[in-house]
Structures are given as C-alpha cells and as structure tokens.
Length: 457
Image (cartoon, rainbow, N blue to C red; front, side, top):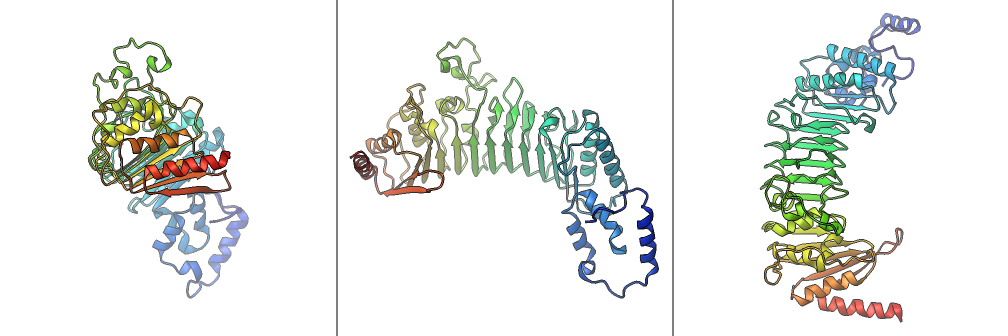
C-alpha cells in the first residue's frame, strides 16, 4: 500500500508528485516486469483485497499496471481503521466511498464487502445503508457490518427486507434488527448468520436455507418471545444473550448446539419466594404464546452434540424439563452446575431421555453455600434409563466436593453403568489439572474417599 505522500484519493495530485510522475512517464519503459509486478492481475487483485479500500486505491500510483486494479477488487473493506470520526471525518469517508462505488468496475465480481466503523453521527446512517445496498446489487456473497456500541441505535436497512440471491454469509455487530431484515426468505443462498451485540426487535428470525447460526451477547427486545425458524440448521450457538430467551422451532438437521444462558429475563415470582398470579407466567407452563411447549429443548432434540450451560438459578432450562423431549440422536452432552439442582433431578431427566448417549460431561464451578436446592419438579417416571452405549463420564471441577460424591452415588444407586469415569480437578491457573480414571462409580467413590481421608489425616 502507498505510504504518506501518496496523492489524495480522487483529488488533485501534489505538485512534487506530479513532477515525479512526468519523469517516470518520460523514462523508457522496462522491457519486462519484475517481482510482484510480474504476477497476473487476478493475483494482484487478491493481494489488494486484504487492504482497507483507502490503502488499496493508493496503490494506483505504484506503477502503470496498478492504475486500475483497485476498480475490480473482489473484496471491499470500508473502515475508519479504529479512528473515532468527527462530523468532518464522516463526510470525507462518505465522499470517498461514494466516489469509489461510482468508479468501480461493475462487471467485476464482488465476493465480500466489509463495513467496520467506530462512532459516527446518526445523520450518516443512510450512507451506511446505501453502501450495504450497493454491495448486494454487486452480488456480494459475504456482507459484514461491524459498528461501535456507541451506534446502538443504528437500524440496518430500516424497514426494508434484505434481498439477494447470491448472499451466503452475513455478519452483523452492534446494529438494530427488525422483522424485515431478519426475514431471509429473499436470500435463498444464505447459509451463515453471525450476530454479536445486536438489538433484536423482531417476532421471528426465519430462513429456509440457513445452516449455521451464531448469536452472541445480543438483546431480545420484544414482549413476545422471538421465534427462531431455521429448519435446515446444522450448527447453533446461542451465547450469553439478554432479554427473553428465544423459542427454537424444529431443526431436524441439527448436528451441534451450544447454549450458554446469562442474565435472561425469564423468571417467575415463585422462584424468588413470591406468588404467581399471571396467567402467562412461565412457571405455569406458558412460553409467551399461550402454549405449554419447550422454549429451547424441543428445538434441540435432533442434535447429535449439545452443550447446555447456565447459572444455577437459571429458570428456562428447568422449566423446559417439565416437557423434556427425547433426544434420539444425542451422543455427546455437556452440562454444568444447573443440573445439580433439585437433588439431581435435571441430570436424571436427561438420562431418561437420551437413549444413545455415549459421552456425558459435567462441569462444576466453585460451589455456593446452598448449592443443593430442592426446588423444581420434572417428569420423572420410573427409574432413570441410561443408554447402554454410555461409555464415558467426565466430571470437571475445581474441588472434589459433595457434588462429585453425589453424582457417583447417584450412578451407583440406579445401577447406571459407565465404561470409563474421568475426574479432572483444576489446580490453580498455572499448575494444570489432576486427573483420575475409574471403571465404575463404586471404585471412584472408594478411591476418592481414601484420598479425602489422606488429605485430612
């Protein structure tokens, strides 16, 4: 990329550089290109695609062969390079990008457009939407819009739907999303959707083609629970979102699911020792639309691998277990402390509904003083059924405490056979882990009891 001293983009060339340019033109042309100039134009365009557009355009002064390469770059990276733009800076960036889009070779394919901006004035939001629309008109396959959290009122494309038969991946960061933009029925090729820090003001996220969905640190705003309808989904990540937990509809092709619940708004008066008088209270079985179905677990029931992480007091997973579906394909399952509540009722419920489970991992953090609560009731009919295919149980903990012994006693009491039990205890941040492997719950109980006696002896 050109350094300081390069001509101003789309502006007048400084006098000293104009003189140098005339000298270069007057000099005899080299008989052959050397070094990077000898590479094919397609390769040079690929190299330019790694640069922000401002730097890429400046390469036009390097040599005659570079003059028009930027006009057909396959990737546009529109960025302020980490700088906070004042009003004047935004106007200059708008002017530059608008000129670039006008001068770009429209016959050249556009593989990706990345828009990454820090703080800017709300009056310039239409410009960002204009760049987005232009990228879609140029048949971009990947569109990325990353904004600063300071622009948390920016509404992508306002009330207009996203329309593109070519778009395959969409990345959105810190933007407001409504029903129009999250209805991807006009994007039949879309396979990946990644959202972080977004404000979701929609009743539904819908796509028939989506295969991978990642929602990180987003806020769900509507009073009614947002429904996620993505029947072709293969991989789902729903990590530390705020507001009401979205309802997952059927995903028969799902392979992996990772759910990590943080400070959600799902709660009930009874959870805090109060009363429940609202007919739509979730503790009474409603998920917000008058039905008593699961919010998360039904949609995840076809997965082959699941991670379900939540705070011990998290409500929505405990509520879902009242209608726990059968996970007929699930082979690996990871749970954390929340499954220890209600005398291991949640763990028992999962073992009843996972007939082909092969590996179970339980992650235990430092236990609070009242970790073994008795609240919650699940549909536990008969003794727990553990798959005969259950081969490995992993318990990861910071301390071998009563919870570990309770899990092992539970397995022994209900004659749940596991081929291998691995217990990993973390020993400080720098000392690594200490591990034990056992062939049965009984042998694990005996060995850990002996270790406890030695430690206190």
